[in-house]
Amino acid sequence: MNSSTSSSETSLSAESAIRFSQRGYASADQPISVLMAQALAQPDLISLAAGFVDQTSLPVEIVRAASEKLLSQPEVGAAALQYGTTAGHSGLRDVICQRLAEADGISSEGLAARCMVTAGSNQLLHLVAEAILDEGDVVLCAAPTYLVFMGTLAGVHATSWSVETDHEGMVPESIEATLRQFEEKGELHRVKAIYGVTYFDNPQGISTTPARRAAIVEIAKRWSRKHKIYVIDDTAYRDLRYEEQDEPSLLAYDDMGSHVIETGTFSKSFSPGIRVGWGVIPAELFNVLVQLKGNIDFGSPNFSQALMAEILTSGAHEQQVETLRSAYCEKRDAMLAALEASFGGKDEVSWVHPKGGLYVWLSLPEAVKTGPKGQLFDEAIRRGMLYVPGQYCFPAEGVPGKTNTIRLSFGVQSPDRIHEGIASLAAAVGAII
Ligand SMILES: Cc1ncc(COP(=O)(O)O)c(C=O)c1O
Image (cartoon, rainbow, N blue to C red; front, side, top):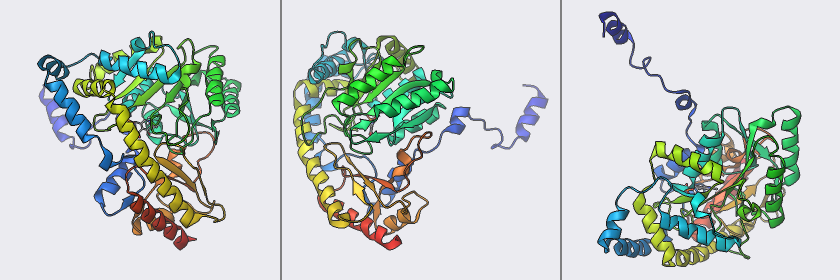
């Protein structure tokens, strides 16, 4: 290093010498991280915000027994404690695909070859975004939808674009109309995917009906004239059903396995601490995702995967899902009863009755602004409860977000605390209008 370089370097202040990447500068705190931090910092606050799972029913015993079983067989234990493959534990991929094929009434042949295991389904969603999206590209999303995925899209400089929803899920006519608008502008090439949470979605708790599932896949295929438009089917809450029967996922409507990227997770149905998610991906995209994952971690934690394989194979997962269904159903009912008690019969107040999942979506009178800068948010915290402002859940472009909405989660709190939290929310609403 010559002396002039060294003197100019030392004359730079430490701060001006820092240069992040464009993505580094573009990154922002996810609203959900801020809300989670707020809840953790104030333990007395009744948080109906974060989508955490029920602490009291986490499967400690099941995991202890499965770990013991793995570790009591020296070779199996050692293999689980070694690095695995980038695509994931083959026994786990097999059992995930058998389960999926059975639930969807499809053949399991060839599924495992395009199944990969990730550290939660968020990582799968992130890899998909990295693999298919360039700056300026667009993903059509339900309005409202899973807010973390919209952050992922923003992080790769892509745009989440809203599609209308009703009580049956995304409205096919709205998807078509949006695609037509892009075509008319000569910008159809920007639309790379349609994303939906098709079982008890986050945040509305709405499931996509079979007719809508078929329509979404059909539209994606028909509009894939010049380039492929994928459908990302996020099935995070599929196992958490409290009413009616399971229905086949979008994969069942994609007979050639060409357009649907299906992702699922054991975070909600078993344990987010183990953090195992998966994806079944069209063949041409599968290798790209594996290569991208190879650059990140060349495989998710192998012990977690071996553990989940054991837990699924032994039937312990299904047993845990049964336990969770009854625990969450009670909490869901507590939240619906609390809403009825506090808001029933009130003008311009409504909520969705979810048949599964972890959320209730509440709409308040238009004039009530639920956002973090509005009066209600602060008043609710002052009265001891926290919610997710609904506006966080709306795509960046398209139809404007609804500023009078709230996402409530019944996953964490006990039925009593849910009642208290909703009563505090009602008192806060009463205080500001
Ligand atoms: C709709 C949806 N998809 C995916 C995830 C990600 O879960 P994980 O990364 O823990 O698998 C969540 C978590 O809240 C979710 O709500």
